[in-house]
Length: 286
Image (cartoon, rainbow, N blue to C red; front, side, top):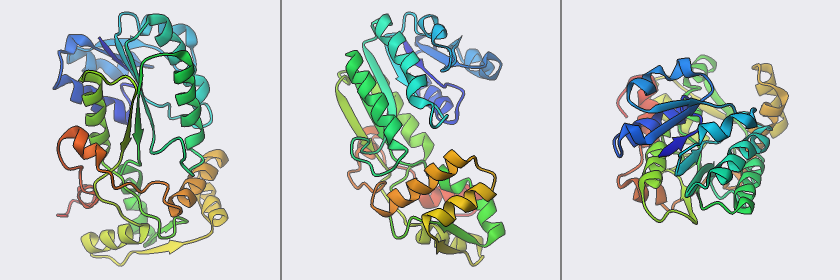
């Protein structure tokens, strides 16, 4: 059986959908915090088990019988390593044959502050001696396209990424890659550096919104401290605002640029163009 953590999350649901195309539903375990939100997964035939990253005692039952586990990174920045340990320890006790983890692009040398918890998690998995695969994902294009309505209201894209290029891909592309790894043979010991085929700067992102929306949108690059303060004013908690601003600075240094095309090779098709993701939000043609 293949167990997927965070199965009702934005990535998790897409992974389950991709797995259902590759293996029998009876072989899929969807691990969730709230079973009510997973009724559709149960209806599709997946086994639904309840476990919380903050409750280590949940995980032995959640992973019982699983041969492979996909550990989807927790969304609680600052708590991830502690939460991930609950899954790692249970996976070791269960004797799983493969533990795959959704990490970040070039986690071992990434300049982004957000990479620290991913490095720590990778180190814990290695120390546990579990056969593992690391899916080092670059940014989801949706990280940016979700903000398009606000960008249109403000009339500008704000950030501190400078001329840094972002090799993003659609969340569904990464989900398909995860499903491929979970259903493939001989994945133990592999590291997949995954990113979109194309890349963009935030100035190009703004220009593309302008082109598709027919509205003049510019990119305004500001100092990291100013960007962090802008995020705080928008209502983000201080740790999150600081981490996002730090990430943009890391992008300016090339932290999310990659032209290896390993993701498209893994899923055996081109990744979703970022311009198409913009079009999906705007309802236009890319």
